[in-house]
Image 1 (tube, rainbow, N blue to C red):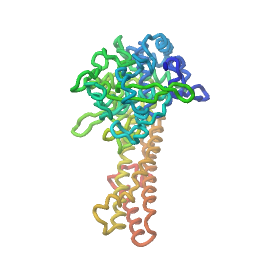
Image 2 (cartoon, rainbow, N blue to C red; image 1 turned 45 degrees about the vertical axis):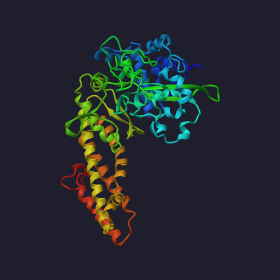
Image 3 (cartoon, rainbow, N blue to C red; image 1 turned 90 degrees about the vertical axis):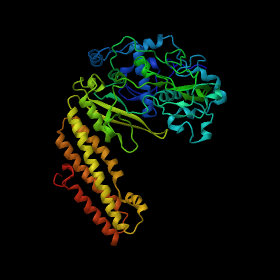
Image 4 (cartoon, helix red, strand yellow; image 1 turned 30 degrees about the vertical axis):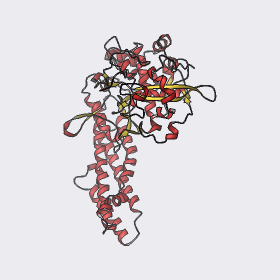
Length: 519
């Protein structure tokens, strides 16, 4: 069985044409029609982004990329055709076959002989289904032989290479006569941080525009190899031939970087009921581990100052939505302290609206939890205003959240006058409207950013935002207090908590925009 993504329909749904029809295309046609395609949509944000990473790798591998910032600016503004990338794909002699016995696309052929004995069902390939590599959420499902379509397996494999997290796998290397650390699963390059894609949002913007904007200039002639399969002879690539510390390497260029094989994978072909190619058995083990990447390879990364003044890469958080971290993103846009990074380049696109799309994989204790993603508007020239709006908007919400907690604790003290100390947390949670406030403030915050990017005065926009958050905060507390009895202690707790919240929102330390006088 053969499956070649150059000729098979392998790309996720593409929004094409003025009527926004959705279809699937192969790789070559995707580049050839890039400026007739509005967008690409995978099943998850991670799948969409992993596919964009692959497409960027092909642009570099075909050597159809700008070498300087000036070339990049012209490349974007003149909409350099991507037909040459399509021609390169069609003429490239490397193996594109997902099921080739010697050079399977994106996989490690050393593992193929072990598929029948040690392979499991295709669920392990999909990070959103498997939970983690050690304790699967459903062992029956893990071994379930129901095959998945080959194109879905291919895209899931791209996600694994880019986002898979560090953990120990289910299989032992010794079971397959591999002396190396096959089960020592390293964290792949995009898993620990947010990946930022600059998405053109001007009228008529296409997939081609998105790819051009995010193709960073590369001043060197050689973009590095395109990783079509696991090449044991590649310098620095793990060969599982010896135990001990895992081997690490630095990518040789952007083509290498965007197609790094972050997992060692093998797929067994099968036929679906309709006769089309599928995958019914997989092996997923340790892949390539990269050295710390130089700045040229992470020019979209957003940093923040952590404990002890240490600079850290901004990543997804289980306790803070992405919009609450947008001030760090806008700080990167405004400061542009890394030279000709992504934010320095998009600042050259005068008058062009761009959305900064942030994607990350939220995980805890080696288990993937969910994909997180959000978009933040940007127009060159509004950097400082957007940063001020984000900072002030976040400060308003943080204060409102703290006020809600104090008001909830006030209600608790009256409603549960003789409660045990161990019960305090649960009792406060009953009256605490913070979750509803944060959920409602998200939409208000994005409206604030849209107003600022459209040219509205920052002071006026933030004042309107503060007024809306004040009303939201009061409603959130009142909603939680409705569970109290209508008289006696219940009435006293409700009235006292409401009064406490009003005083906090009008306190001298409260943000001006939250106060009744400002409204």
